[in-house]
Length: 140
Image (cartoon, rainbow, N blue to C red):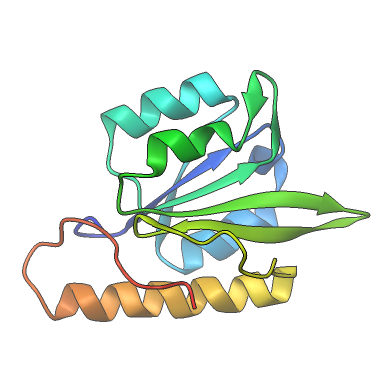
């Protein structure tokens, strides 16, 4: 977590128009950054510190799974958005550099609660040490 806030990268075309979702992230203390495709996401990840990545599974130039190889060595949390009827499930993929494959997908309300718990742990961890070098705590 960077001093002064947490950085979230939203990857995919649909996030920019989801105002209520963005407002919820901002209330949790996230600064939102956007990448419409895999190439732009990779460029942003190389140029700035990101704490959380939320990505669609299908991107215009590839799959959200393509981000996993870039993020595997970083202390970042990654969720992929899996569309289901009129909503979505959030699939945890990486947490602080650890593989989360096999954990259950989260419904929207469960995802919101998981984000609230995660950000609370990040804040407590930041309060317990000087300038943080990255977000770290388990999703579960």
